[in-house]
Image 1: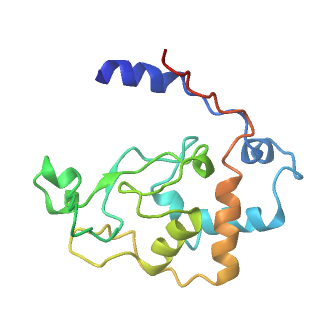
Image 2 (image 1 turned 120 degrees about the vertical axis):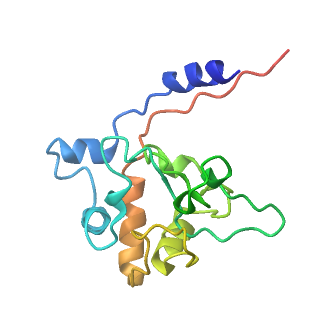
Length: 167
């Protein structure tokens, strides 16, 4: 089953995004607000520390300070790797087509990209395992909006294939 899922996942290819066109030199592909969001993403907000490369992931595991649900506690990678830094650590997701993938975070606790940016802006829950890269950001409302605008540029306009109905 795992190999079948992995084979299927390898067939999912993101189409060209506004960000791709902008990176290739089309200055009209993204808005000024999204360009400001990119500057925040790679600068003040520090998102690119973990969301790097063409897939916008470091493929590593980090505790970003997501609150633990009392009803369904999940210690993440700490369950199988007995290191404090792995407690509550989850794999950094790639951000291609991120605007299509709500609910967000490993437990679906963020309904929107605005919610995700708000969590990062607060710095998440402070605990010994939280990544040292995660800290309160002190973003303005306009900066948070700009980050979300940038994240939307990572989503392509290609159509999503509807799953076939089983007989």
